[in-house]
Amino acid sequence: MHMHEHQLATSRMRELQAEALAASRARRLYLARRAARRAERAVRRAARASAAVY
Figure 1 (cartoon, rainbow, N blue to C red):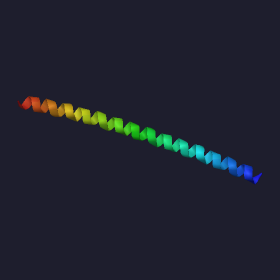
Figure 2 (cartoon, rainbow, N blue to C red):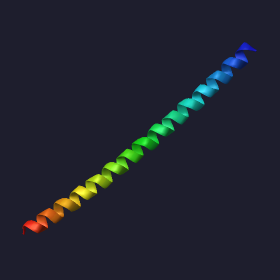
Figure 3 (cartoon, rainbow, N blue to C red):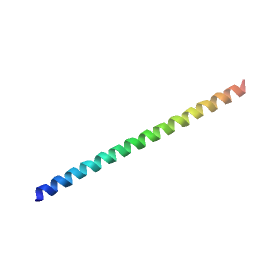
């Protein structure tokens, strides 16, 4: 019985670790996309500012 409980607990722990990994991966992807959009806007702003100077 004890062995079975241990296997269940280990299995559940692996599931939780996999979920945590997926969540952190999704968060990193979200943050990277947000940073990319922010960089694009900065580039456009700089291009407009540069065009306004000339």
